[in-house]
Length: 498
Image (tube, rainbow, N blue to C red):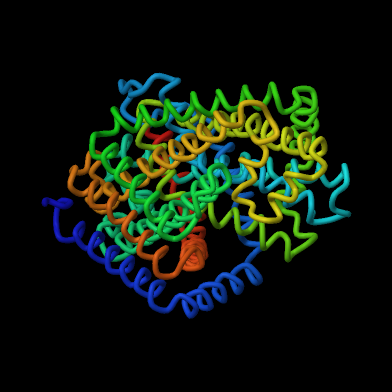
């Protein structure tokens, strides 16, 4: 198998693989000790640097929109005669599918109910708590999250398509360190990107497969054991690996389109049967509250324990996913202008997400009231069953419940497709069309690592790895802050030359 273009590219693959194996071995054989270590590290970072996570994301917002609406916004991500590779619909479907689609399916009901019961301020279980809960969900899944991906994607797309540098995170630092991006500093940045991507996807595979397993138990009584979860992971791994190997234009585009249409069908169904007027009122009220509190909530630390447990955790999680989501949205955005790219990446998926969250969250609150707390009870017992508990309160549950599992699987395939493709690019020197063998290797590797951890350490080992990848987001956050200056420096020079 030919990997990359030389020894330095193979070094990224080999070092990344060794780090992955060491963490998997640690999680398998010493799960309790690993959990203690990573939880201690994460607690230290959030306690002492929670303010920096909030401030960094605020800076990303200012930089992204500042560039978009400046004269630099007209610069094309590519040569002047380059045309977009995908239609607008295909582009939007892939932007959304490569990001947090699976997260919305997982958390769109559970998170608002959890905030409703335990809000960061005020009394839980009240109408005020419901409004606060929905505003918080918009905040965590809105512009702040996608602007992180936009910064990473802008750097990659600009330096690859405009400047002809390798399609790697390290290339974004060429204006600052020059050819040293090909040396140890650049390789360290790329290895950190691989680390965050592998464990971000592995933990999502494990936790999301747990949701599928609990759904099967909730619907048909099939026991959600580690073996059941492992079988689900194996099936999903085979599907997304075959899809990824078949190529970006074929299966990845098809998976994204299927997921979008299935998502739209669910949104329409829940909108019609979950309380249409209540949902519309929820959307309108929450959207207004979101923009009214945008700046204040961006930097709010009035309840530090809650902020560290939720907001800082989310910001770190999105930063950990920035290498792979940023690289993927950049990969499909050649030929777009910088303004078009930033506005599309930060606003289009966010608009879709807000509609989604309002429909699912609004329906959950409405149906919970009508069912005298049935959905609250389900979330308290096991929050992974929140979606199925909500669908149970609506018609044709025998049909919608299996389709919900299909939606979860389709969402997994979309995210895992893009992650696997990006891992192959990162470990092949930035090759935008990495070999099928390398794509297949990373697809199988992610599934095998996850299954091993599930069988030996259970979901506790996966949660420890999730925390570890989020802790790794701290140095990557610092890298992204420097990246902002590097982008500005390059754009200023480019604009002067033009």
